[in-house]
Amino acid sequence: MLPPKLGAALYRAVARIPGVTIVDDSQDAAGRAGIAVAREDAGTRTECIFARDTLEYLGQRKIQVQDTKWLKKGALLKTSAIFARGIVDKLGERPGGTS
Image (cartoon, rainbow, N blue to C red; front, side):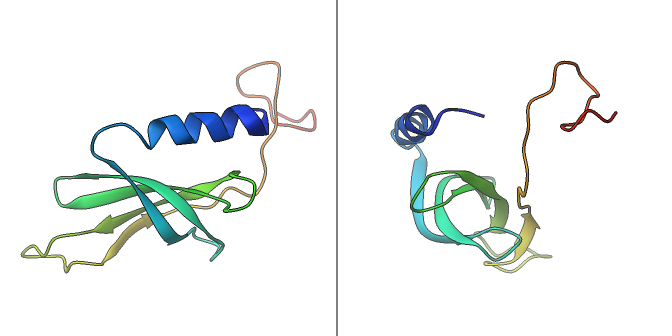
C-alpha cells in the first residue's frame, strides 16, 4: 500500500523499463476496466491493472499472445481482482484483528 502520489510515480517509472508496455484497455477478474502495465514473456503477457482515474491497483491477468499446440492467441490464462487491503502488525494477522 502506497500513498496515491507515490504509487502513481512508481507505476510511471515501471512503464519506462525496456520491454514493458501500457495496455490502455484492460479488465480485472471483477470486470472493472483500467489501464495496465504489461510485460511479455514466452508467449504470454502479464498485466498489472490499475484504475484509470486513481491508479489504484485492481488486479492482474495473464493472456496468451501466441498460438501454440494447446492454446490460441488471446486465451485468458489467469485473472485476479483485489477488493480489500489492510495493514497488520504481524504475519498471519488479518485486518480487523482476526487471525
